[in-house]
Amino acid sequence: MAAAAPPPGPTPAATALPDPTPIGHPLFTRIRLATASDVPHIHKLIHQLANFEHLAHHCSATEASLSSTLFTSPPFQSFTVFILELSQTPFPPQLHTHSALFSPITQTITLDLPIDDPEIETFKSNDKDCGFDVVVGGFALFFPNYSTFLGKPGFYVEDLFVRECYRRKGFGKMLLSAVAAQAVKMGYGRVEWTVLDWNVKAIKFYEEMGAKVLQDWRICRLTDEALQAYANPAAI
Amino acid sequence: MAAAAPPPGPTPAATALPDPTPIGHPLFTRIRLATASDVPHIHKLIHQLANFEHLAHHCSATEASLSSTLFTSPPFQSFTVFILELSQTPFPPQLHTHSALFSPITQTITLDLPIDDPEIETFKSNDKDCGFDVVVGGFALFFPNYSTFLGKPGFYVEDLFVRECYRRKGFGKMLLSAVAAQAVKMGYGRVEWTVLDWNVKAIKFYEEMGAKVLQDWRICRLTDEALQAYANPAAI
Image 1 (cartoon, each protein chain N blue to C red):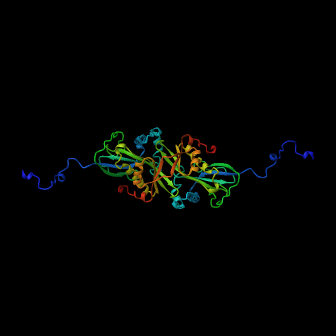
Image 2: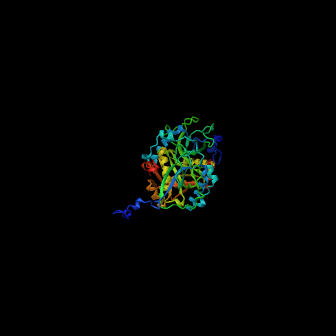
Image 3: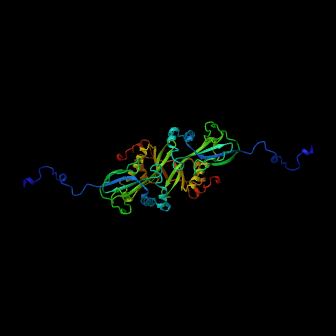
């Protein structure tokens, strides 16, 4: 029986034997270029964003209006959408990329607890290369802007959105970083977006990412009837 | 001698005889699409704008950087420039237009006094259809942006500039109206731009044009070294 007794000193059992509970839950992430087939998901995400901002009454986007105005130009030349996908199994190797200018970005994160996604059926990914467990978790919509002072383009991020159950896990930073990385790759000078002045959490987050918040500029907007009044400039 | 005497009552001479001094000075204006040949003028106008804003030290645009980044797409699909031209003689009829989507806009205004342009030689227009008295007075640089809530594009005006000797005569409004008219023509939803919060004169001017100034949104900007840090998103 002595042979079965543990040797003197600290027992090695805790490391030598397999742990019955795995340490963390891996979640595989991918950021890829959206295509026209993603419009139904993008439409739902835009309306979730409008609800989140309590601005649903200002949101009139339809699948038809998005389909007729997005994906009409090559990526990065005009309105461009990055889709964030999540999977519990690794993404397959990239057999093809959507654009010579961009290869999908994959990362793996480890969570303490698995995420319970109540909308998993609604947001199953359309990408045919992937299995059925791939789900759309968020998006970024951006397009080129231009700085005359720099004499070069940049990117303006119109929307950055992560679905509620995936928040506070670094996915927003992942999407914004992907836009910034693309700007650097293309030799662009700036990435810009806007934030509400009372959203101190978001401002802190953006400043930690290296952004400056321009305090003294205001956005002017001409829209609705005030814009329609300019239909004939000679009559102004 | 009686026959030469004026008849009783008010003399009609002031209206019946030609007035040796004309009432006002007509100035003929045209807004047209810029082309690559306008880059030297656009470059000078951008630097005048930077000086006006006391931001010359932030202005690194060169003719080469502008030439390589502007006019690479058809007008209105990406970065687009409207040039304001002024002439003391009427513009010739439009023998051709630069784009099926836009015809140059001509207007005539009457000034009390002629404008003395100290830079007339520097800003002579490049348009070969016009005579030598045509001068470039200002520009607007704009490009499409996108509202996900509207599900449609708009225009963002990055720069609106009129040379000093031509200010306070309605030319800024003329340029901005031309952009707004083009937005309406293309079925776009908004025209946006920015203003410094202390520039109360400009804010009043924009509000009189029908614009709303969004008080609670701030611009976030990632640039220089903070942007370069995102060269490799996997390292973030």
